[in-house]
Amino acid sequence: MNLEWSIISIAAALIAWLYLDQIQRKKRYQFKLQRVKEIHQNALDAERKRHELLLDGLSDALFLVDDHGRICYANITAKRMFAERTLVGQSPQAVFPDARFITAMQECERMNKSVVTRLILPQQLSPLGSQENRGVNAWLLDVAPLPPEAYPQAKLRILLRDLTAEYQSEQVRKDFVANASHELRTPLAIIQGYLENLLEAGALKDQQMSAKFLSIMSKHTDRVSRIVEDMLMISRLESGEAAALSIEPFEFYSCVQDVLERLDHLIVSKSAKIKIDAVERGLIISGDRFYWTQVLFNLIENALKQNLQPGLTVEVTAHTTTDGVEIAVTDDGIGIPTNHLPFVFKRFYRVDQSHTNTSIKGTGLGLSIVKRAIEAHGGTIHVTSTPGKETKFSISLPNNKIQIEDHFSAAS
Image (cartoon, rainbow, N blue to C red; front, side):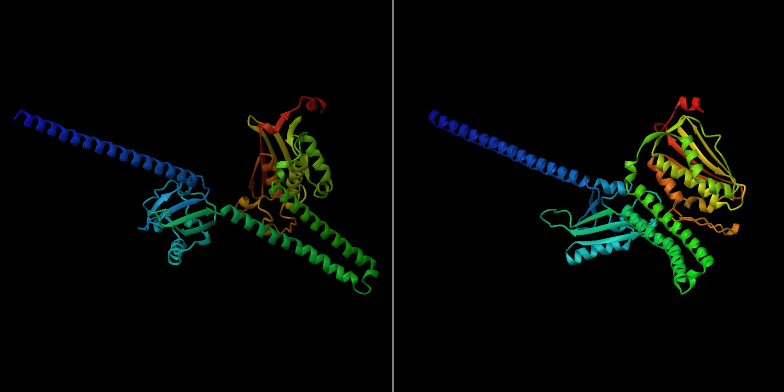
């Protein structure tokens, strides 16, 4: 009997041990399985984070669209582009205001291949969430299908690239070429016409007529030369050559005097008065003297040519402030109509002075050169005007561009 109980006890203990061992094995297996799952999940999370870091590093906006037609991912560029609006969970129709976005996605799904298109949108249809007024907006839209094995939760990839700056530069170049061609065509046509007249039989024998024709041709040749020179100058300023300006200190007062010497004939012919008493003596500007000469020359010449009536007064002032230096060129002439003020620095823009019965000729580039040259020196310029009273061009330069030399004041 005792033997039987002993056998039963041993058997029970063995069964219990086997049961407990099985439980322990199962727990260890579950623990290992859980660890494997955690390691796998951590690896997936790390891989996803790496992918997101790469996608967030893109300068283009990137969206992923799932099987339900909802945006399931948007990179940082997309969020910034849409002013931090909620994008994930939205339908593309709710995010993109133009029907061509949706058409591109539908074509991509139907043909199962990438669809790339360039969109020019008016400001009110810009996908940007900001209120910045940039006129039209240009975008490159690239929609492509995604392989299920690579992205099981997404079926489409949308790439949106802002081409507005490139589009505007392209338009500027086109406008520049068109305007330059127009500006050159007129004087060249006049020169050609007078040449044809001179080449006619007997025309050169008339010395008085020949001299008149040659004088007119010379005048228009000078105009062509001035247009070409201005075009080259503004092209250099806008192409990045401004970064290689010949920067060195120079006295501003002497620069003004040099300009007045160049304009002396025009000043005398206009019976104009140029006041430079308010130019601070000993004011030293660090910059490219050549371009500053052009700035002053264009501003003063512009005032003289815009006002055909004699007796004009032009005042040049320059003085230091706590922030830098303030320079101004003011005339007491016919002024500029208020509606023209925002455009006076545009290339080839001319103010319509028909109300003054004047015929003002110029290249239309002078004030554009002024603005670009000042900006290349780190400064700003703006214009104010009261029609029939005065026009004032005000220039501001930062402190690091100026200094005062006492010995100039002593010498004067």
